[in-house]
Length: 73
View 1 (tube, helix red, strand yellow):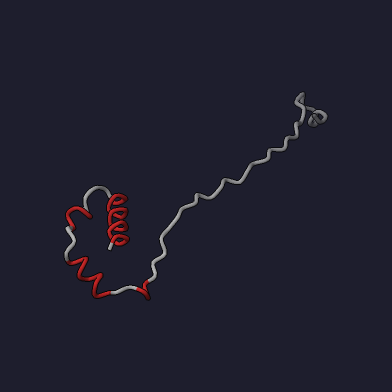
View 2 (cartoon, rainbow, N blue to C red):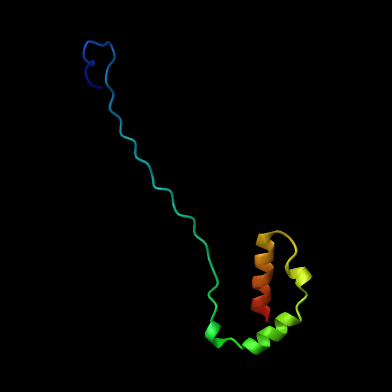
């Protein structure tokens, strides 16, 4: 502690507070090799897809289902 502040009956206090920087949230993603794609075959597979199954659920489920579909084609 330090001395009194001026004519006050309060004493000054010095503190040091160390904060840890919050870690950034990490995530993973799939990188597609577009140049190696057989676009004709992909179009045909997508044409035969039951889209009612793929676009059901919330947006996160839809993205997951669509990604799984692309990985299985």
